[in-house]
Length: 263
Length: 351
Image (cartoon, rainbow over all chains, first blue to last red; front, side):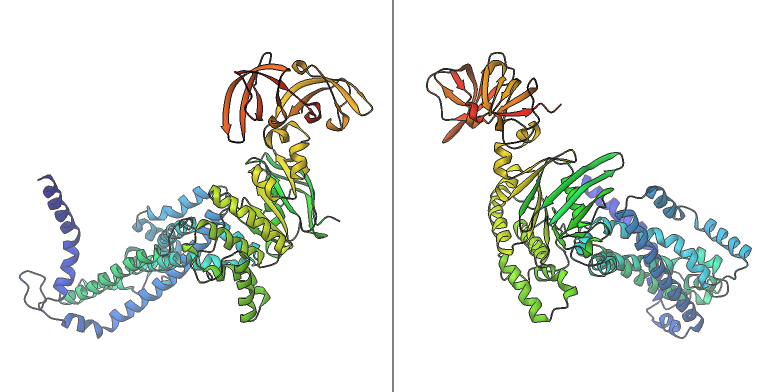
């Protein structure tokens, strides 16, 4: 009896979590401009409309640019910081980590406003570059978390062995550190890319005339007749995002085996 | 000329002095052990030789070349780490070949050299095995091969057998010694296991609290320790407080409390000892004899060990029991002990 109650609760909980999300793909395939049950038949025309939407594709291009640059920069910065924190006894490392993670807990709207004011004060234009800077604030902590975990997972003696066997710091990085960190690096790239790609508030404040995809979608909501197209777009983003996160999780745990096991 | 020369090396971490004014000389081709309890500074000393730690003061020279300013990757040393640190992303062959990249050997020559090393450590045919499918003993062999294949002038081994179980450890001791004779490279081993140090090495340095107490052959360390700490650390030793009465010619007369007046050869006294000094007379358990007459005592503890047994004998007027190793004495619990003067050695009290 008791266990059945739990099962019901679990299903209710999952339904609450995922039903709203599932509405998106369902209505994106519905042959009607109105978002209402009952469904009025299957169509793929909203998806077709997407392929001829130049403005949407431009926004998509912007989002890809911002996402890729943000992912690369935050992973490189995260890699340097993670190595420093895990390999050297640094004074105030904990404090520095705390401050790096702080932007995660500052409301995005506050971050967005402050960056907006800063850019205005400095006389710099709103641009995709400004969006990248904003996204770095929220992506570096993610990269750092993933990469620190990976660094802590491998024996620091391995880098010393490499030096002992005649390789300098640079070659040691390429022959030992990088291959062992690679799953962490890929996971960090994927997670920071997705975080940047899906981010709305900062992009809304900082993008100016060059809308990213979420900003473009927000703009489209003013036109009721375009709503199904937006839903189709949302469904695609949803699928790709979930796919990338699952891939990142899978890659992140690759090769994590205790090296001392095996007798 | 010595091959490795460490001169007055000192290293502190914060307020803790880990290596304190250590000087040491190794000759080419010897198997040398640094022996001491954990925390005595032996691993730090080893890491200074490899270049992973920089001495605060003092110099290190290998084969006549000063090493202080040479980074680890350019030193003529290789190290077997305590954790073995096998590269997990490479197989056995690539682990061993790792340090040969700079030689730019043609493929067949590289293969031949790695295969020869695989044979030396008896891992023939395992070159293709991934690192995570190796047993503890195999990992140890790969670590050894990876270091030896570079033909270093000096091989450093940090507790190389510590992670192995007892039987494997004993087998590897024999093999390690054989490999050292075969390759002829100078080995410097760090260990806290006195048996390992004594059975493997030509010479041993005993370290405590960052200092070297004595450097000697295993036999000399056991038979002629130069201080109480070494005598205590190497095997078991009975100590008796004593006072030197007189030293004349080749014999010294010592008043040794419950042992009475003892005459022993001057050569058995530590060099600094003068008449009137308080000293310690020391004797190994296997040199104490059960006799018809002598110091009377009572056996409080006996451990049967086959050919010999180990006893604790309580003697009136002495708080610590005397340790005796020998065959089971006849009769009851009450025994008499004899302390042959030729087996007694005189040490300074150390304070």
